[in-house]
Figure 1: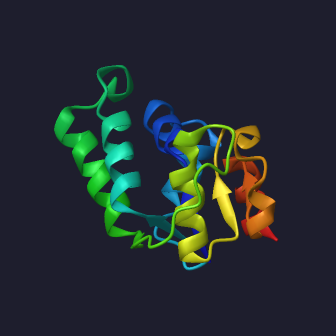
Figure 2: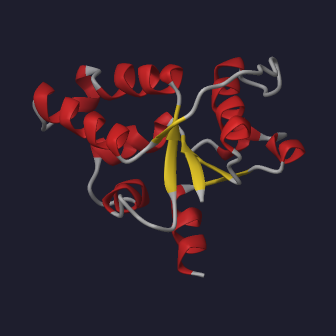
Length: 137
């Protein structure tokens, strides 16, 4: 199944090895799910992950390697239709549009309430911990 990983998941995984975000990304590649990215989302990933406050204990090259890995295990999806505005935060609309275009059932995020309304498209917003639990069942 394809899923969209919100930028908050990548940043959390980069900042801590102890949380559900890191545990989820350590599973990649996984036959049960595949992250989906668009050019716009990957640009957002890159901008967030390479901020000095997020690189922390890694070099710039290691952070770039992390991004290269995420891209290598992800499905690159083109988006042909925009439904803006659809969510309370217009910056989150690109995540929803990607999820719809790729036929995703889940958006994995730390900001679940920012994605209220995705149910209209048959998409559930879940935390990384909740998504790990879904993978167990």
